[in-house]
Length: 395
Ligand code: SAH
Image 1 (cartoon, rainbow, N blue to C red):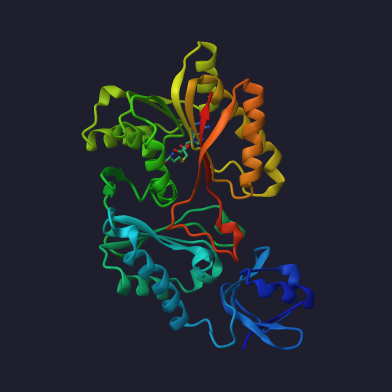
Image 2: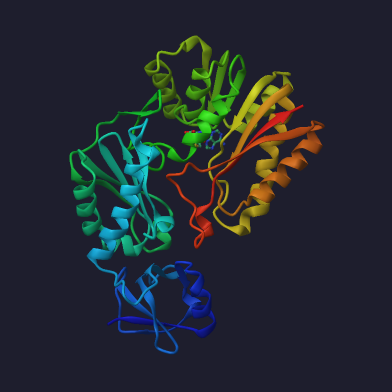
């Protein structure tokens, strides 16, 4: 069988079961594996450590599916892993009040690089690396067996595929093509989403519990929702009783969808204003003409992908948070997020403390937020923790 011999020091660290093996940790590859093919992973002492998939182009040369000589990477193991992830989501609170859920969250579910979201009767998949790409047909057929659906759609149009040497790939994998607009619900809130053209897989399910938490503060508030997309926080805030919500985003099509979502929920359109602008510029405008708000939500896109850009990203986070603090009325609420994985909770809090000092405002943290539980954080894969948020009182 094709195998990779791992250098002694690196093999020792694999006992913590982190699923990535960097190319520098490999002493030798036996055979000529093609992209995505399965390798037996062996120590220099010739013990089997587990099984993983090969990525010849990526710095992460092997991603591990199994840490046992007894669990070979075959259809039965893939089935067992997908079933475990999917059935847990179906049997618990996730499917109670909602018709959408993340069914599989990559390495955190022991399935490196596979994302599966369920939106009403459609599934959307991302195959983020060579191993899942290699087993795509099996994965699609297992999903079809486990989850009744009208269609499975692929949205592997993400930059990281290029690092793996894979082309971007979008389209129907099975069943029918999803319509341009699908109605989903999170509790009593409904959204129209577009899984073919929307961001990522169409909607940000990771913020589900946070939308409800933030909405708890919105009653009678004048709210500014920055990076609003199709209205996740805006609609939740209006539902929570906000007096008025201003939603800022640089995408005009996202804001068009947001307006449709306000209507879909039977909410008063006159309470909702949309502004197509860059957030930092819009916040500066507000500062310059003295506009104030009771509550500001900052949910920017990923500012960074790797540690090298942490300093630059830190400045960008500080900038928008500092401006937001200045724009809040006394005792205003700031709900602020970072989905950049290399930005730690500690660093994020430190950046906010600098923003607080520079803005001259005293800030208390009321709640600490994380990603919704259908995006679990695996202890053997700390990289699965990426979303952090703070709800603050700005005195
Ligand atoms: N809060 C949303 C998700 C935000 S995703 C929710 O709960 O669903 C990030 C959004 O920021 C995207 O809609 C994108 O169009 C927008 N965006 C990216 N850069 C921006 C910028 N500089 N100014 C304004 N919007 C921006």
